[in-house]
Image (cartoon, rainbow, N blue to C red; front, side, top):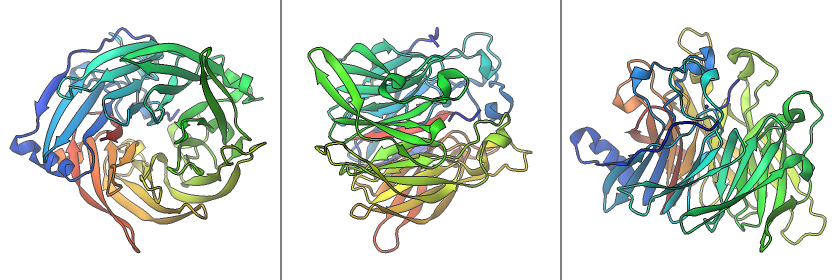
Length: 450
């Protein structure tokens, strides 16, 4: 979450494997054994605590937090947990982790690098410039397969449907970059970098990149197109991707589409006919947390896409609907008919602030793929600080939502981890809370695979 962590010295350490069999963790096993997935990957940031956004202070080093990728494998009702140190940062969108569809590889990028010795404030953290490939073929022993250097301050990544191409957006002081890197036989290929300005995404504001900031990149289900959220300009840009012997290329695909304010993240629907974008609504001119974070509800916009073979492709904005307050992450069910936004509400404000709240929420919406209509079902509250990322399981019967940390004094079922809901379908959709899987401090994104 970027409300107001460069080449780091930290390295990835050996993996730790834990079998979840103790009574204390039995509930975690029970919760996850109900979902449809063979693998759950969760990323945690150890450098930030929630109040760092308010006062810039990093936690004391003796707190023992660490940047971590946790892998939960599910088979025959049994859950095993392993972990590996991977540099990452909550200051990016909750799109910095993704699994390949077969669950054999995970990819992570770092907007800020790991905390150097002596760092006391957020300003002491170096800019990140790496993307990591983690081999999960032996889930009990995840290992770093490869690392590639990319443009500094990467905001998000996306894995192509065939699992062989990674798209990343970065915002350097000079340019917003769309980067493409192939992945084959456990190794990254060369990184191809495309300046968004050269692709027609230009700004006229003063400051870095003339006011252009890209916060999200997504692959179309066909693997042929990409969407990039330009949140500082309230618009979405679409590109056609081609991979030839001379290397990858991208070119604009149709028109950019204006959406709601601050479109932080987005998703294609699984049939490839629509793009949904969650618009947070921040005030970028504000200099304080209170001024930057909106009091009004966030929104979601529906874009109907041109047909793949349409000449002079024109995409169309269909409409915008309110969701919840400070919606950062979002998820779309596998059948494309359910959508969720993850709403931080007032949990981003420290205790003592008049805007502080103990409860966050999930907004559940239904989507009609025929008409492109979103309908809000309701908001479902739960306790926790800075929930950001989320995913439906492979059947769409469960929703997994991250919780960055718990409130002071919160018990093990209300601290950092994954909040798990059962999705009630039918004429009256709803979410039913199952419980929380306790995980290391700083959880901010989650993904699942077979």
